[in-house]
Length: 321
Ligand code: ASP
Image (cartoon, rainbow, N blue to C red; front, side, top):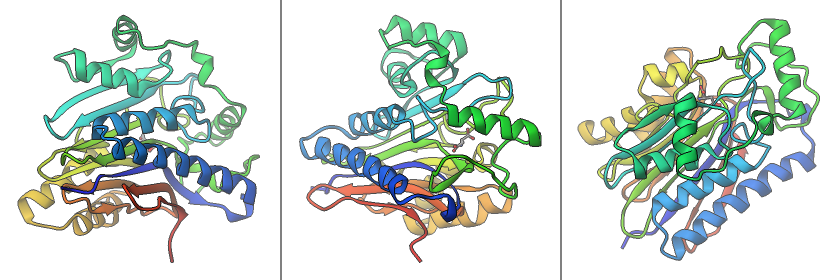
């Protein structure tokens, strides 16, 4: 029997250690530890990989430290547009929503699409209507707003950039260990359950100062989210356009299946070669069908953690070396 395991991420980006307080770092570590341990407990109690990743991402969405659900970034026009995706490696079923602004937990709407629709991806008002018809909680759009994200938009507007410009000098007010102007706050989870099933979930507010209607990789199966029991479960964070162009998540599965590469080889190739070559920044979490875990990123840090059933959870923010 395989040993069940879950991995989570809370986005990747640049580190400004000078802006970091020990207290804030501790908050991030605690949130990551609590959420990954919760997923581990679910798996130990026999939960499916799909249930474990959905709940882990729901908890990450609820945590305002991360750019998904509450605490989501603002568009150029000062609104919020959220995207999410879940994929079941057992059946290759996918559910996703994009450009929603009234669904408290987009991952639950994505799950409802997977379970209740023959469609894969709903957008905007149609996604919200579908979610409402399945009793998914709705909120007013300003539910997602936080003062820190508003500040972030004002800085982006004054520099006229879509923030994720890794060359921009950030002047930020809070003490987030990852520079909030230069980090990707998408959240995600991947898991392997005791029955050998893989699942992945990804949820995001997107990128600060993005144009209304812009959709990144997060809700797109194969780009920002992918799971196939034959190979691997993957959730990405980073420059969405590049993760779409490289089909980053699926490329890992393809390299493993068709080229016989190990999880480590395939995920390092995608993040450090393919994504980087197109000017993309970010990282991903992945678990293969044997339970191997890879957490590569080409940015300076990535909020991440994983926990095998029966073993202590491990969480990290910065590069190990
Ligand atoms: N990948 C996300 C997007 O492009 C951003 C992120 O990872 O924070 O929408």
